[in-house]
Amino acid sequence: MSEENKNSNNQSESAEEAKEPVNIAKEIWEWVYTIAIAVIIALLIKTFLVDIVRVDGSSMFPTLENNDRLIVTKLGYTPKQGDIIILDSTYKKREAYYATLAAQEGKEELGTFEKLLKSPSLPSEYDKVYYVKRVIALPGQTVDLGEDGRVYIDGQPLDEPYAEGESLSIDSSVQYPITVEDDMVFVMGDNRMHSKDSRSSDLGQVPEDAILGKSQIRIWPFNAISMTR
Image 1: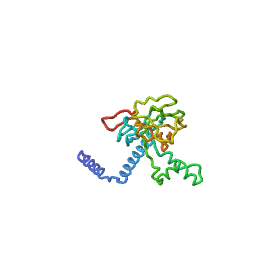
Image 2: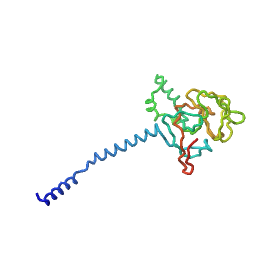
Image 3: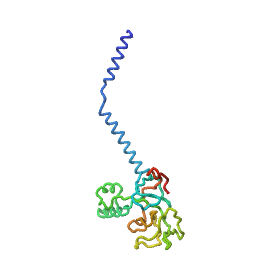
C-alpha cells in the first residue's frame, strides 16, 4: 500500500474518531457527582473542623469589634480558661424543649436523629443564636465578683488585661460565689458593662456541648488580622 493511501486511511480513521458523539448524560453525571462530593466535603469541614463566624455587637470590645470575622476550630477542642469561644446561647432551652417532647411521646429522651427531624418545626425562640465570649472558669472552680469590680477565681483575683470596665453583677437572681458544675464553663464578655453572659440567669453556665469551638484568628478587617487571645 502506498504512503498516500496509508495517509488517506489514517485521516479517515481520525475523522471517524472525531465524529464520535459526546455522551451528554455521562458528562452531566460527572459534573453533578464532582459538585456533590465537593459540597459534602465542605459541609464536613464546616461541621467538624473549622468555621468562619461574624462578631455581632460590642460585648467583646476592645478585643473584638462588631463585624469582625473569626476562624473557629472545632475538632477535639477542650475549653481552657481564657479561651475565646463561640457558643450556642439557646442550647439549654432547646434541650429542655426536646425533653418535653420526649416526655409527651413516653420516651426518656430523643435521639440525635429524632432531634434532627424535629428541628425544622421548632418554634423560632429555639433557633441557634451564637455568642462570642471568654471562658472565665472551668468545672469545679469558684467564681466571685469582688466589690472592687474584679473577678475572683477560687479566692484569687483573675488577671484580665483584656477586660473593659468593672465586673459587676447584672442579675440579682444570680448569687455569688458560684461553683462551676461538671461539663460546664462560666463565660463573660470582655466588655463587662455591655455583655449578656454567665452573670445572667438567661444564659448561666454554658454546657460544653453548646460550644461550637475556639476562636483562633481574626481574618477581617484585613488591617486587623491577628491571633485572638
